[in-house]
View 1 (cartoon, rainbow, N blue to C red):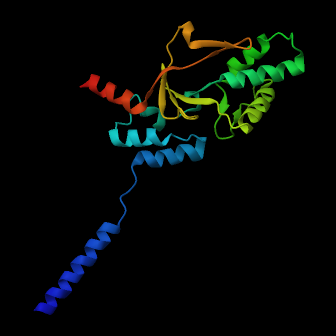
View 2 (view 1 turned 180 degrees about the horizontal axis):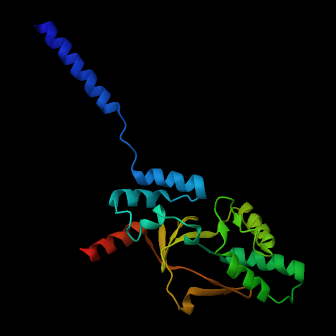
View 3 (view 1 turned 60 degrees about the vertical axis):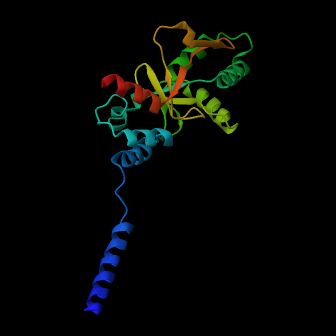
Length: 207
């Protein structure tokens, strides 16, 4: 009898060990992030992944849906002061110090919505995008990054730089959103907050 109980106990212990060793299936969003990276080159910041997994939002939620129905139109790029300075300097090396910067302004305004994450470059279909890509490669080689974001209409989740995982406000129609560097006017985000904080406030308002 004791021998039977011993074998029974050993069998139960073995089953318990096997149960403990069986890994839990990954959260569907983690799998979706892998798909986004593979297909589009989109790398969701770890803090955003952790946040969205914990909140476990429905797929049609305002802050969750873009990841499940991603389109490159959701991307919006913001230039930095250093990039503008570099680009203007290289433009003037080609066209002269007194060159009209209006064509460069138009080119920058167009290309900021046409960035290919997977190829890590601006869309080659845009006329003169080769010049911007050359500036971007030089800029990146220096260790700098542009601010690439996922657009939530009037809010943008930052995907790159030290601000990755933060949400910046993109207030429509406010001139305070714009800066001018070396004769080029460009847009900036304001009032950064962690994505977790933004979602928590939204859920509290929905209750």
